[in-house]
Image (tube, rainbow, N blue to C red):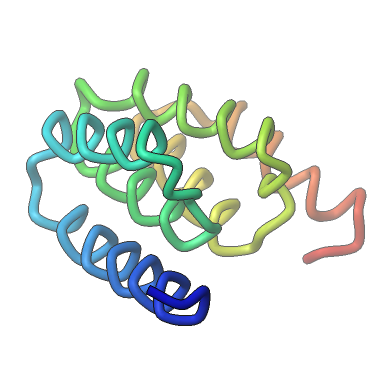
Length: 113
């Protein structure tokens, strides 16, 4: 398989995973996300946005969302607007206004608003 074919396959896999993350099975989605990273399929900003949005839909998944937030920062996706939007939504929906404001403030401070 050529490198462009492998890159195309990874794009399709990430897209399919992002679509699956919207199905409401947050715990299973998190397991799949972790398996993809173990298989060296690197998440992009849209992958993170999808899993964080899935976490926002479920009260019990907010801790997982925080972990994905940390992972996004570690992978240097913390300035991606789609991730910040998902984080603000997740934190605000669960009543953590302080964390939502901190994410928003990063964009104000870095000129990304």
